[in-house]
Image (tube, rainbow, N blue to C red; front, side, top):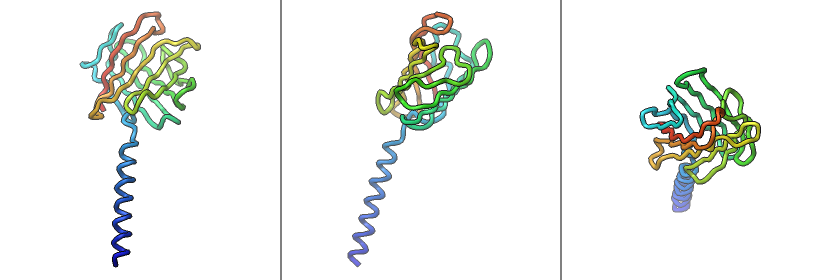
Length: 157
């Protein structure tokens, strides 16, 4: 009887540790994020009417899907899939890039360097808030029109 109790207690402890480890390893960046236009700042403007970013996978196989309805012009949809480190091709109609480089900074921060024809354009830093409900993406660099970019886009989960 004591042996059975010891086994049950041991299994319960193992399950608790495993569950805690899995919960801690969940990537807070993963999810679908919707732009909060009122909290965001775009320079040069104007801000888009709407934007959704979906982040999936892990640093070994990250996928980012972006849908933007700009203030003027055609709707944009583009995707980038691949590991952190090397250039990852972009499919779709991103006006500022044809490749992307992901870099993990820490558990709540991911950097992305956009490139057009091999030349860096816009660098973005995406940071998830402590409560996991907000994603703030700061973008700096030069867009496809040659304009300096200094954007702060705030997304809600």
